[in-house]
Image (cartoon, rainbow over all chains, first blue to last red; front, side, top):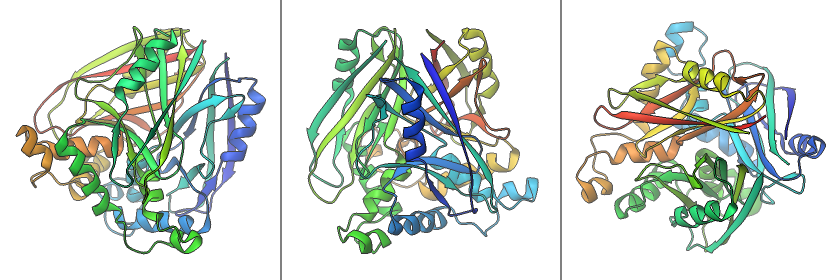
Length: 138
Length: 138
Length: 138
């Protein structure tokens, strides 16, 4: 059995972290699949999906880390190709990854208590975003 | 068809790397699923799951890399929220990721010869940990 | 229902980025699975699989980033174990990850327009590589 849902939302641009956990749990619950696997995929190449404790401190720490490891505002070859100035965003996306997969048990995605599924916006402008939630199981 | 198992173990705190490969292969073998997908998920937000060659040199190199990229012992906003001093551990977890997925073929998880599935403990104290192994296939 | 395919190719060593997207879409299309999940797994411990916009600028930016975060040409404990000088490659692989999973919809892997699935070669010599494409769905 398979099921899918699309979650749509708007972001404020680089540094925005969107907590998708409740919308994903709703999609899993409505899918009718009780046991199996759920994959959460960002559709795009300037964002990421990962897990983190969604609290105010880490919401500042994670963008600061990204800026330290892969700074915006310095030249990248990508920017010479397109002139859109978001080379840093593509690199962050490739580093962290655009997909997260976990188990489904009793109609819920399996996560730790302080482990939320988050969408990380890296692009240098507000975006309308889609995340695909795909389930396989029974 | 779906199947799952939970692997439980204790860690020694930050820097501990636990080779889960044999326990995962046993769980896959006992599942009755011969072909499909297996997902290995750390339950928690201060650890990670990835693959690496599990040998003594890399067991020292990987914690050293983590300390260089996301040092412990420096202030993070997270630590101001909770006072637990493990902000670095949450950030490392979000960067590396808490889940690994691969194919199952003939009742075995598909891996390279020197590619082991490992649990990375980042938290600043010994922990009791659970990893979920979830299969979907036939 | 499950299906799988193996993609084989040669790389030129560290810095080589192989765009697997079309071969993966062909494998998905030929699998007969219309809806479900596809996992793409690098078989090995000195390479990675991720998504990025496959364009000439980022093809230079991503190896440059890797060299900045985890340089080749400096000593790692791994190199003392085996003497093969590719400790940096194992660490990059563990950081980025060796597997990517996304949804399958209407017989296609779900991706953004500028989001390609790529294989990242990190090893310090040309390699013959295998990537497993595994599907579960209906």
